[in-house]
Image 1: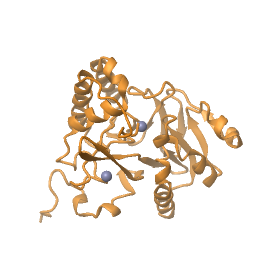
Image 2: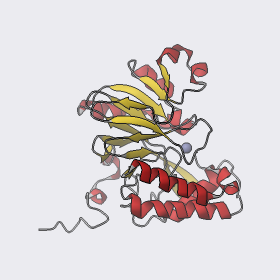
Image 3: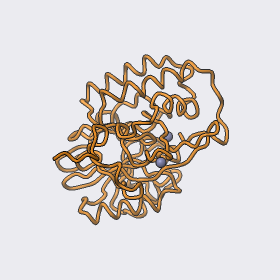
Image 4: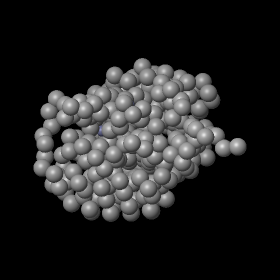
Amino acid sequence: MLDKRRSHSDPNGMLDVPVAQRMPREIAPGVFWIGDCLAQRHKGKVYHGYNAAFLVAGEDASILVETGHPKDFPVIERHLAELFARGAPPLKYLFVTHQETPHCGGLGRILKAFPDALLVGDISDYHLAFPQYEQRMRAMREGDAIDLGGRSFMAVEPVIRDLRTTWWGFDTRERVLFPGDGFAYSHYHEDGHCGLVAEEAVSLDLPDVSSTFADLALFWTKFADMNVYCDRLDHLIARLGVTTIAPTHGLPITDVVATVPKVQAGLKAAALMPESGTNEKAAAS
Ligand SMILES: [Zn+2]
Ligand SMILES: [Zn+2]
């Protein structure tokens, strides 16, 4: 007999799980979404954004993608402890997409807490802040891959990038893309979206929250032809065969074909609006 609570948009029954118990959440086999929301006020509304991190567990080693915002470190630490207690292999690698606080703000804490872990990906300048960890930094370029046992983590083209040094990541086994500031959008706390994937958050106006985030945090999208960027995104997704997208600020995307065009519509709309300017209300970027 069908469980009436499980609809097309809620095949996992996640809407019945209290928000506090949704994370860590396995968004693809061995890929865990961890971290917490950050409330932002904009035009009289409260928007929630994530500053998420992801643990990718191989057979021999785990890699942490992003570190979360410094305010979230107790949450990140608790979620990691929970995953390791459940059997995730030891943390051997940390990959951050770029040098901004919501992405790399816990870098020193992670390297201190996990003395066997190496920092991989872009490593520019981190040795200046953390000279004591310089010997644990390994640069990756596009196409470089790290073997975790049964799956690899690869550095891939950062189509939507905030900094010149940005890299995106890709899990070769489950075909999960980690796009940092790509697919950045808020969600509605009042509608219970925290801890849901994009397809479960049915009341979320994805084009609107995507364009708002781009307006506040990705100013360069005003001065670029976003059609070109969206075409390039389509090309990357097709070339890699991406099936899941794990953005740092947005909700994870589990139906690439249905959801990616909605986010792209937001990027294209934001590019045509005059810049509203960033101030103390600005979204994290
Ligand atoms: Zn939230
Ligand atoms: Zn960001």
